[in-house]
Image 1: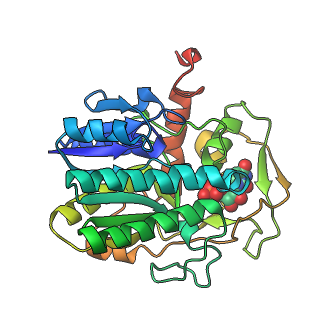
Image 2: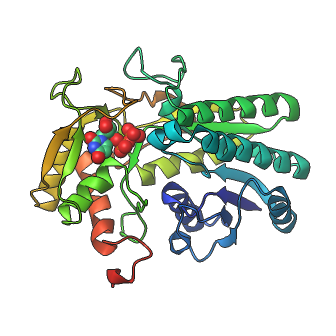
Length: 333
Ligand code: UDP
């Protein structure tokens, strides 16, 4: 039986494909390559280029492959962009997921592990954030993730489709051998931006605000290593295969680091100066987001191994050194 990975050429999806193959799963991948990289997809996975909103394309894959479960990473994922282009986000994320579920229902596929987000919570009332906290998304991106969770809930109710929604906090790092990593264009995430500055590709890091109510004034986030994050997806798939109920889990390391702490750690790891200047706050950034991941640890048996922030940054640095210009650039040789 086959695991179908939607968005398997993206940063997180490609790490999932890689770990599934290493664990001897049979894997098929769908990606439209709008932001993904085919080079990131493990050679042993069967790759199909296409869009999840294209129903006849999706049906053709479900006809060809004996799909047992779906890992769904295919989505637009930038908070700022979603504020400017909300309809694009509702179309790709919400409508795209609807098509996926329609095709799953038609072909009798009943298990799905879904990439959700801490953005479903909005500004938290309590830290660390538990899964029972209120959900008040503050961006179209977060709204789409919450809507998709709700669609899954009703599909479970009506069609007995079982889902695990994994609410990610800040995912960072790369496969430990440096062969796959994080390559967005344009880049907007903190760790790759810091490391591109270390490589001299950017003049300086812009720190978005130092007047937050935190110890050093900069935003605090919970960084989880991509390798640990994917481990939780495979545990979630096994949990569903064992006949368990649908559930929502936070995935974070349960520790918070400020932007300045991340920068200082990266200076230590890389031995580079990494110039930085403070600029205005970025719209929509809550001051502190830290997960309680007790539920994933207790129910899924998740044991994140790479929680040390230095190790997370070091693994990302390893990838950035091996692929300073990302996947597509021949200058990497
Ligand atoms: N950040 C920053 N400068 C940048 C990019 C990000 O200061 O150039 C901050 C941002 O305000 C947030 C943290 O770094 O507090 C993580 O941002 P990122 O975009 O990586 O992830 P997000 O928290 O939006 O999921």
